[in-house]
Image 1 (cartoon, rainbow, N blue to C red):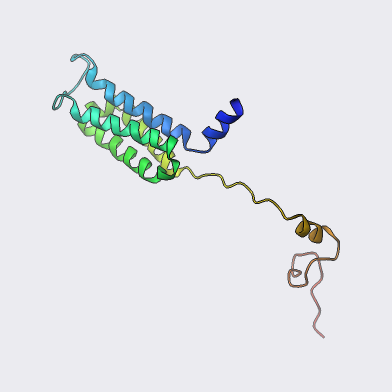
Image 2: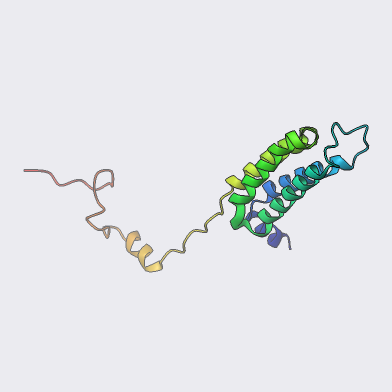
Amino acid sequence: MLLTWRRWRRGRPFWGGLAAVVAGAEICAIPLAPLKIMLQQGIAGIPSVLMGLVMIVMGLSAWFAPHYRGLAGVLTVLCAAAALVMSNLGGFLIGTVIGILGGSMIFAWQPVVPPAPEDPAASEAVAEPGSAPEALAGPGSGTPAPSEP
């Protein structure tokens, strides 16, 4: 079970997606706070909730559809930056900072390509001493270069 979870987590931009989901939830939660805590309500907090939901969806899409990581990362950063202006300073700067970090982690993530299995016949040919092809032997290969007369 633990090995399956670890393999699933490593096969996608997990930490960036988690940061995007947390930032989106934080930006969504601010309009639901009491009016004394909020700085600016806006049009009933609709932009805050929409940007938070987009960030949550982009974080989840990074988990469940990692091939869309480029789009998810860029949209998360754009929503986090827009939330700075449209949503109570981006969830009091916490949501914006976490959203920008999460979006950049999603965008920067690259899948790990497993190494190709070696051909046993090719490894035996290279392992035998003196079996290296002459075309591969040259400067720095350990074999002397032919001298000019």
